[in-house]
Image (cartoon, rainbow, N blue to C red; front, side, top):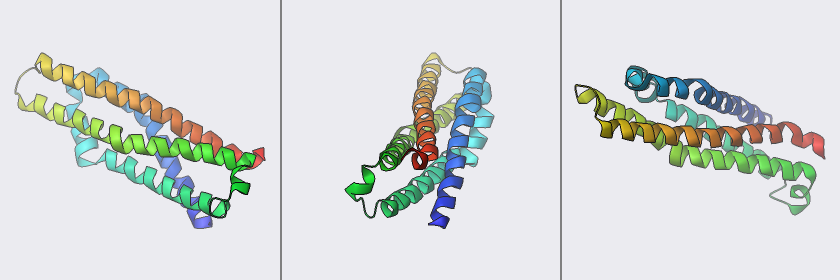
Length: 168
């Protein structure tokens, strides 16, 4: 259990910290730079595979959390799950699970779409067309909107996990 707790906390720190860094600094910078951000996007998204980093950190966090929740609840026993601590851990876990699913189903494909549209812009050889700019703006807005939802969810998960043991 100590190993799962350490994995859960370390991976969670990487997931939540990376999410905050991306939402507050990276994404707004990329949006402001527009087509000039393409080299950075290529490096971070395509070559360094940032979406895979988030997927790995989130998956390790969620798996370790599920294992600990299963163990703490004695196989999902209703007695523990209905305590204040059990409910708060459950709410935090649910928030993390929703964020994890959104990240895999929406955020990662949207970030990859931004990279692909940027590659199309570069391949066009001149200034990007209005159609390409519109697609880029829509993809970036999708990343921003889901990023905000994920940020709120992971912050909620952290608050729940940090306080659950002390509430009941």
